[in-house]
Image 1 (cartoon, rainbow, N blue to C red):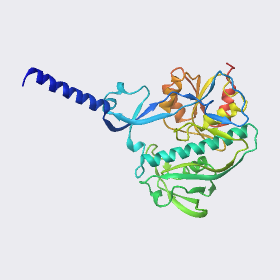
Image 2: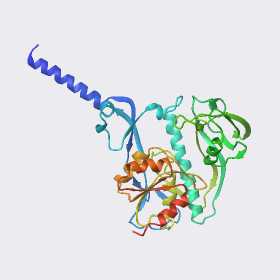
Image 3: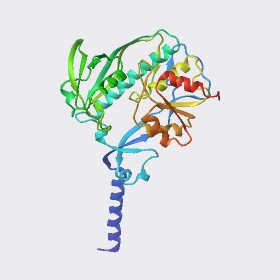
Image 4: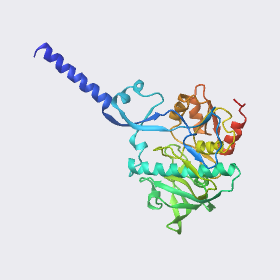
Length: 333
C-alpha cells in the first residue's frame, strides 16, 4: 500500500470519527440554557397601560435536545450551563416524547389562565376562580397507584381533608409513611369515587412518600378582562410567576421598579409559587439577558440558583404576594 493510500485511509478514518463524535446522537439529552426574554410583547391585556422602556419582566425557558458523543465525552464541548441527563429522566416509563409534549403544552395553557386570575385579583378585579381540586396529568407506570388513578382524575379529598390545590395534596401525602396508603375522593367523568391510593418512597428524597403522579391545578376560571399570552411552542407551567407579574405591570402597577426582573415558578390560584426544574439553566439564561434580579421558588430551587448566580441577585419567593413585596423594596432604578 502506497504512502498516499495510507494517508488517504487515515484521513477518512479521522473524518468518520470526527463526524461520529460531533453529529451522532447518544442516549443522553442536554438541558441547554436559553437567554431570558421580555414578556412585554408576548402578553396582551385588555385595557393595558403603556409601559416604561426601562426594566421589564422576563421569562426563562430551557431547550432539550439529544447530546452528541463529543458533548458526552468532553464537558468543555457543552454549551455553558448545559446538563446531560438520560432519556429516562425526560420520559417516564410507558410514556413517549409526544405524550410528554402534549402534557407540557396543556400545563402551559393552565398556567396562563391561573396566572391571569391571580394577577387580576391582585389588581382589584372580581375574578370568578373556583378551585376544583388537583388534576392528575400522568401516572408513572412503575408505581402501585397506576392500578388506582387515571390521567384526568380530579382529586378533591385526601386523608380526610379537602384538596383544592396541588399544595394541599402534597401536604396530605406528607402525613403518611412511604408505602402506606392514603384515602382519596376522586371525581372521574362526573362521578365521585372513594379510592385507596398506595404511596412509595421518593427515590430522590429517601424517607419521604410520593404517589408517582404529575399533577396540576384544576379550576373553573372566568376572567373579567381578555388576557392573551403567546410563547409559541414553549411548554410547561414554570412561567406562571412571570406571567402574573407582567399582567399586573401591564395594568399600570410599577412591578419591575425599572429593573430587568427575570422570574420562574409555577403559580397556584392562592398565589403559592411552586418549585420548577431546570434551575441551573434558567440562571444562565437570566444572566445572559443581563437581568438585575431573578425571582425563584424558595427552598431547593433558590439554593441551587445561588450556586450559579455569580453577580445576579437571587430573590426566593413562596407566594405571588411575597414576590410583589420584595420587588417593592427595591429602590426605584
